[in-house]
Image (cartoon, rainbow, N blue to C red; front, top):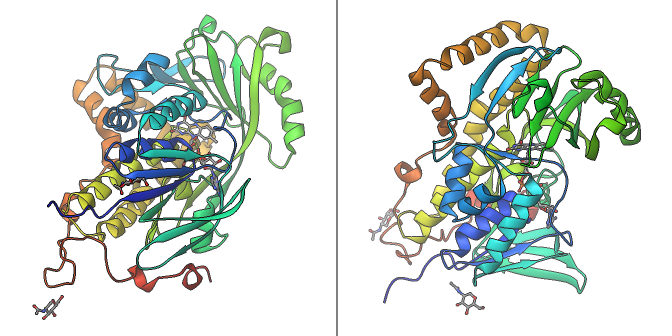
Length: 429
Ligand SMILES: Cc1cc2nc3c(=O)[nH]c(=O)nc-3n(C[C@H](O)[C@H](O)[C@H](O)COP(=O)(O)OP(=O)(O)OC[C@H]3O[C@@H](n4cnc5c(N)ncnc54)[C@H](O)[C@@H]3O)c2cc1C
Ligand SMILES: *[C@@H]1O[C@H](CO)[C@@H](O)[C@H](O)[C@H]1NC(C)=O
Ligand SMILES: *[C@@H]1O[C@H](CO)[C@@H](O)[C@H](O)[C@H]1NC(C)=O
């Protein structure tokens, strides 16, 4: 008889882009997956829309890429402009590259993921299951959730905290503090029908200016655009929404008045650079926004989340196939934190500062110079395209074999609590 698989059941908290994609990948491997979602439906806010090469490869592995490409579209490229619209520099997409960026608003992507997840016989999605507490012991991780039928406790081999920036799993493990900082800037993310192409704009544009910087990117084939602009800090949501027509008229090409465009959505956001102290405590694992945050300029946010998914899926499958013990999950935490500190945090800060910071002018000029060189230099183009690959890691070099003289040599379940942690009381000081 084949040795028993070490992972039989996983609970995923949160039906966002991270939770659903992991759910699809793991359910396809015959692992029983329960996704718990606090809300009654998928999130509809204007958020991520652009998925870079490493995300595309993970979508392919999950078998969803074809549908994503069918529903989304491939932007022609990204460029930077002066406030008056003058082109500065740009990077054209390689449309024949199989991993080329695809654009699809997050709410549409979530619906597509959900359809795929619900086709898996080993997957179930429970709405209105809000996790409010956790506990764990040697054999099991458990979540306590509030449901319309009352409080329930559900257990599994592992619990993946994919519950976003305000993650309850992270708070239960480490307390309210999410180490890092809130940037002293306010952004307003809007969705709007307005014809930027008429003004010579590309599919994605960053406008560089000390105060009136913004981003305008076409996010649907039928011409809906995401416009994300800055505003002064310290106002209420109501005040930001009242200022939106005035900001549009000042910023956008053609100085449009409300009748000239169709506004679909507007939400003010704060920009955060944060990272949890560890992405693993025993049988609890943090993924994507629950584990780290960065500002959305340059799309490092969910891109970093996709890299977590790639790493975690590789690690869990190596455990499942008897190639390593669960010590690999400590490596997942260590490497993902390192990637955040060395790449995601500095690159996302640089992407943002490039738009407005006078102190970043030398960096800005060097960056535009590089873009210009890339237009003709194929080697440089390849280097640019491969840049994000540094977010991934080959975990096979960290595999550890179970101790052969132990009581259960075939199981990769550590018989000892990790870091001496058994119950949450020990960590949530
Ligand atoms: C304005 C804006 C623009 C962005 N643009 C981009 C972009 O262009 N490209 C990019 O890569 N990224 C972008 N991002 C970032 C991206 O949207 C996030 O990184 C991504 O949504 C995070 O996914 P997630 O699955 O980790 O969390 P979330 O999307 O936040 O999902 C978490 C889910 O968990 C549920 N949940 C929360 N708490 C509980 C609980 N206690 N119990 C049960 N369920 C719970 C929530 O209801 C939610 O459904 C943008 C973000 C913003 C704010
Ligand atoms: C998944 O759950 C079903 C129903 O409870 C059970 O019959 C099956 O054995 C489980 N699969 C695994 C891999 O544990
Ligand atoms: C079992 O392994 C431990 C180290 O993990 C070692 O100290 C011990 O001597 C080993 N026992 C036998 C019987 O090999």
